[in-house]
Image 1 (cartoon, rainbow, N blue to C red):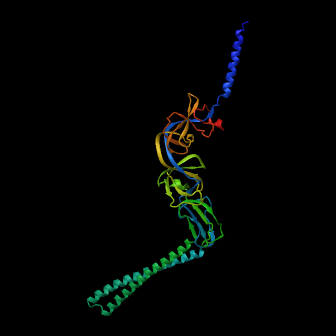
Image 2: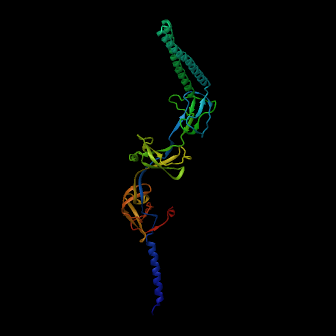
Image 3: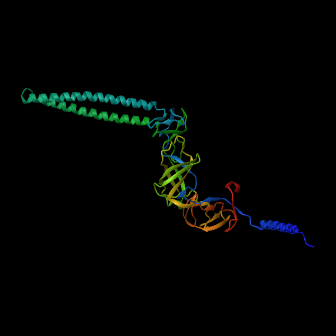
Length: 386
């Protein structure tokens, strides 16, 4: 008896379904990869600080009086903007000011005396010339002529002595004024008062030798700033003066400041024995508005050692050690391991000298242990990897 063909059709469909299920079950699962394109652009070789750097003011003065005394005037407060030469603090100095006034009066008195004596000397000199003329005509006696000449010489000497006295009085006045100045703190430059340690009527004393004490007033230049940061001793050797650099700060997120290297320390810091560094200073190069920039902010510097333009580049995160990358082949849905020769490199980009072309897609999640040559792959977004 012939079997019905429909039965064989059903059997074949069941077998096909089972075969499909078995094939799918035994087929390798695709590797989940995140890819980025190979592009052309700029690649820089840079070095950066190993620990956070610090924004510093170009000028900062921690001032204290050179003599002790009681604070009599404190015309400024923390945060005030001051001008060069402005009095910031003054100790009680009425006695010194009185001595200064006395010295000024003595100087004025000496000038008046000198003027009177010198006028008499000029008059005596004219009288002496007239008497000498009369003597040549035998109208005046020799004694009269000698007396007139001697008096003129004596008054001239008194005039010179009076002028010398003026110089002495000037020196005494300068000493008196210097003593007053020692009781005053004046701003050495335009800036902002950062700190005041003292109040009216309190006593301040100079720091004893070898015993530092807080400054009476701390003034900071709020116009000029630079960044000082530690660079690893291995990287510092390649840095040169006036190299281009970039400054970034946590306080100014996503903002990059152009800068130039202004100083490279002549010695190595060994604060941390296992990570010796060289301090490098970078000065802001642009016309930046520093109204909101404060000395003491943490900052990072990146010094540009070399630049290549319009080169083939890949994201640095795609490069595995020994110059290897995984390229994704979209038409085949699988990966291909490629050996590449690299050039300049930084945290973001690596120059590719050969082995890849612009437009190729490379895997960037290279920490996936399933990556392998000819492995099937499936592209996912970076968020799906989290």
